[in-house]
Image (cartoon, rainbow, N blue to C red; front, top):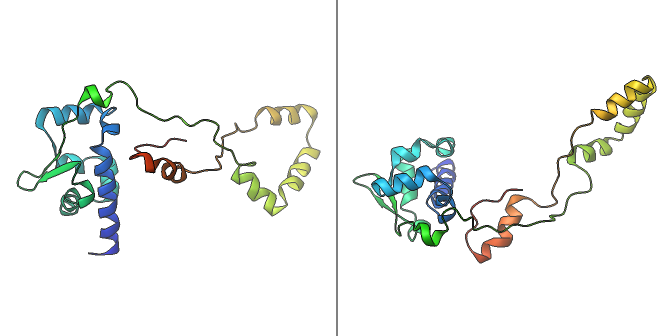
Length: 178
């Protein structure tokens, strides 16, 4: 097995763990309906998912990921039917169907300056260029330029992986949105 196959296998294991998790099934109506209807998903169903296609289209590798020891408590794989199913049926009552079970983290620290400004400050040319551009403008042009400044997009001092690592000791983290 090549390192690319190892990487794809690892990614498949992570994706399968997510797709069949309670946190995903709380929101994914199509997946819940498919599991209720047939009890599982075929490898072909899974290979039609865009996130799976971006990893690989190798059916044998996906089957190998479905048999991975890390997933043995969550899913089972029927090689004859090529179907992956949950070991414990998803229960809407206890899994909180329609009731999000989430942790909301507020007031995450922001960096002092967005990365673009840091790069410009490092160059030392940003202020000089701005002043040179301003000198030749009328007051109306300056005001119009002020009105058209880009909207501030927050740059958090932490990334998704750091937030995920912080909460992993308390249970599997499904989604982190910053």
